[in-house]
Structures are given as C-alpha cells and as structure tokens.
Image (cartoon, rainbow, N blue to C red; front, side, top):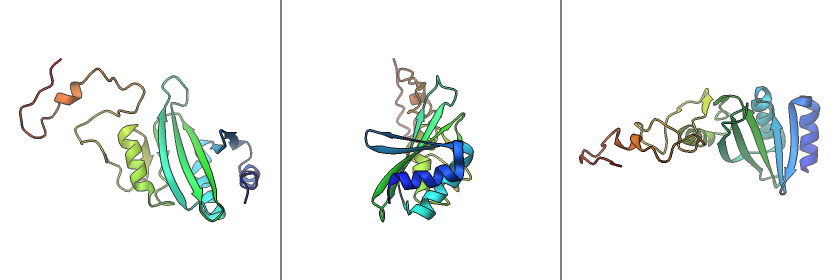
Length: 164
C-alpha cells in the first residue's frame, strides 16, 4: 500500500476538505476539523492504521486557527506512517478515544500541557501536573518568569514560599 493510494481514496471521499503535504519524507494529511474524526476512522478501519503513536498539540497564538492537533499514525501491516494535522480555531476538538483506546492518555496529556479540550473524552483531567496548576505550560503565551502559580499551594505543608 502506498501513501498516494490512501490519499487518493481520501480525496475522492472528502474532496476539497482534505489536503496533503510530503515534507522531510513525512506524509501529512490535513483535513478540515468537521471531517477529521471520520477521516481518522477511515484510516483506522480501511487502511489498518491501528497504532496511534502519539497526539501532539501546538499553540499558534497569532494565527486565526490558534491550535494544531497532530495525530501520528502507523500501519503495521502496510508499514507506512501518516501524520494527520488538524487546525482548529479554539482549543476544542472531538475525542478519538473511541477509535484508539490509547488516545485516552495521549489526549489527557495534551489537555494538561496545551489546554486542548477533547469533546466526549471519558475522563478528561490532568495527568502530569497537579490539580492546582491552573495554566498550560506548552502554550506560547505561558509566562516563564511569572511564578505566582508556584505559591498557590504548599502541597507538602512545609511552609516553603517562592520569593523573587
């Protein structure tokens, strides 16, 4: 199975709502957000992309579509990798945890670090940072110098306070 065959199928089914790009030897599929879940489901069912390697969220505060959600997929049977890159206006997109169970943890990580909300996720909560941490450190507008969050909670009760 070649990437071109997969893309031809997707182009015939979704038309102008999907684009492709091959960059640095990587196959990118770029669907509109409203068809992205159906397209991902097609890749899983019709082309054996059964391995969801990773989900990555990227924040672009100066763009109209402020976030990208990138799904790194691998078809073990076809020995082909594809990246599905979905640009979204705000931080909300549908979950794919009903397609790949591993997405439960990958989506929680992106929610925690970038603040992307996956609608329909069965257990969307922080996975790496403590609950009292109110911000998302991988957003481009996260202020590294302001450490006011550091003093919000003394979780060990040691009376430790950050001072400038």
